[in-house]
Image (tube, rainbow, N blue to C red; front, side):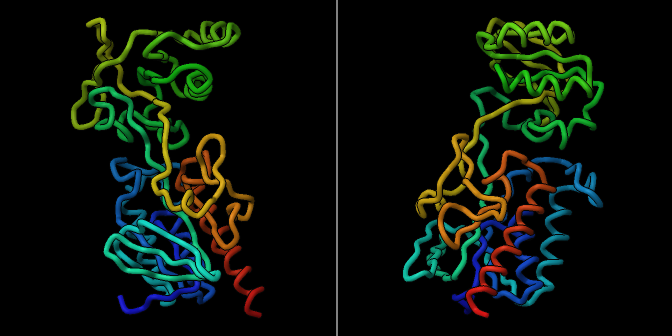
Length: 301
């Protein structure tokens, strides 16, 4: 691309990044969206709990969003991966995997997070399809089914409470020694939620649809779906390179305006929120765009 200098560069072009771009485009801000086209939900069949688009595929949502944002001529798109960013004289220089160096006054990190899959055969193939993370995003579609919760301790207990309103056939699979307080175990018993401590070795499935969970002792159990709590890491090291603070859980620390700990750097979407949903990504992106435009207005007016 010929243009190299912008008012704002957005790293990440999924829902949060595109929402930021729309807000900026509507204020005629020269904006660049850098994206490699690999959203974290690309394996998920349908997206839910987003008003007006409930049940759409992630691809459909992205295509609509890109087409609508592209209508704003001050918004530009770069197909590639941002691998490095630095600040010099209040200007950010972003280097891509293609070797291009692009600059801007403000930087938005909409880079998402990367789920760390457990060492269970078949788990990653089922992730986002029949092994899911969020009752709000997926729970209605798998209601009243025989369900496993692959987690332990507080995370498992929290999920069990949410899922119990959607199905009464719940088993917690701790894949090791259980880690619950006495009152939590009593509460689980009261709600007929079993705990299995056997180690999971494999998830049998057909095209990502869970059929059976196999344990290390050779036994197995049939389940229709599972919830799982997995750890994550930032999808990009750029926030760390630019000295942005992270929370204890590993998210980029932001305030209510989506500003990071570093001036002129904003973050939105999954990388800076515990709420992993399309609705949250769109909201935080919209907020980031509005706040950036406000800062640019104050600096230039």
